Image 1 (cartoon, rainbow, N blue to C red):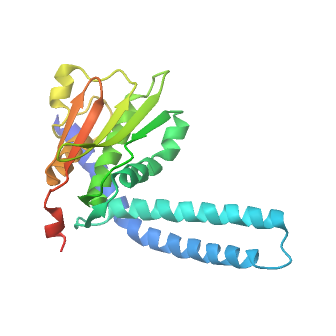
Image 2: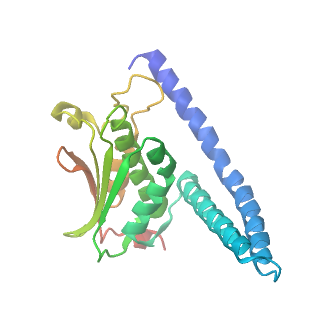
Amino acid sequence: MNSEAGRNRMLQLHRHAQVGGCVSGIAHDINNLLGAAMAYAELVTYDEGVSPDSVKMLNNVIEGITKCSALVSSLTSISRKDRMDINLTSPEQLMNEALVLRDYELKIQRIAVERDYQSDLAAIPADLAKLKLALLFLLINAQQALEGSENKQLKVSVGNTEGGIYFEIWDSGPGMSAELAEKAFDPYQTSWPDNQHMGLGLYSARKIAELHQGSLDYDAERGFRMFIKRDNGLLNLGH
């Protein structure tokens, strides 16, 4: 990496950091406005003069506001300052919340998403913001791998495995060569020539998995597999 490319990447990282620093304040204001809009919409539904069709439309508005609030809260959770947020959490919910954050891009790219979740998933101790961020990095990587492909498919799986939980993200893209796979988790490694890709996503995701006494690996057949140890000791740190 030459010095000019290094400077460009650092400028990009600095800009993202500055934008991220604004998220919490903006999210607070947005949630206040959404809360007011929901309260007014709910009040109108109680008016005896409102027709059933109008009540139905207002309920659709309320549902949309609820989804917007959940999106803002989910975004805030991954952009907060680097502090631990450790709780028992549902692996299925974590994956779903990460997918919600990429829903718009998935639809724009016309990527078909298949979800395969085991029915008896147990809650795991996790740093919620960090683990959601790791899943987000893997989803973004998969989306980028599908750019230019005609058959755009994404499969996300969550299941129990010995000692913990696994998350798998597979895409129908061309996959990585064995040589590239060996370097994929190194910092600043990217196959994209522009300065929009920092080459830190997979590196960061593996570090987060290791924080949970787990691992992150790549296999050409199943894609990326992140293992999170169930008895990882994080609950002791969070209290």
